[in-house]
Length: 279
Image (tube, rainbow, N blue to C red):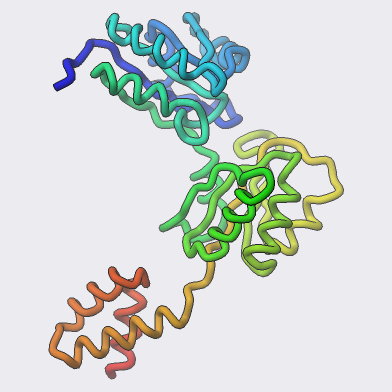
């Protein structure tokens, strides 16, 4: 069994644009940390300066994270409190952090988190699309077979889809999704969330392409796309199976629960449909 060490890694969620979203816990954690690792030390300096925090800051980004993870582990072994921040949002969520967490776990250090703003949940909340079940796809692959395969997978995804895009790729991403997922699929495009020029546009994928092409695009984009409509054949089959099970002696509640779990359809919708047909 791994012996615990006294060091602690704190994953710090940072504002996605508006510094007014800084929490008291974040300010205190950064002020008290023995060392802060940051995805971009220049952006970190701006944040820390705004908070009046002076601290040792070292870089931690994709190009050096393997080396930094080993270094971080040694600091934790020595009993240090280490904070990790990225350019915006939560470390490990489409940002560096996975290797840091595993390095901390590997030496038996405590890993804790200070939640913060998230472009994923912020865009989802204001999108007007269902948010009870969703998938986060980070960025689409840029080209080739990987991109085609990912789009083909998303075409059948029934949960709401959230993904990131940059100004150089957002029109192409929207266009390729319109072609692969269907132009009538509902979409919300969120730009510059929490910032002065925040904008949330809602429409269909077909409408989104002319809306965003041709103009000067600025900022980071979070795209929220409605999931695929449930395949009616699958739902009809589930209804028929539930009715057969009930007529064979299984209770309605048990039959609906079992078949909904097996088929992946909504238990509530299945129950209401079976109840209506039985009447």
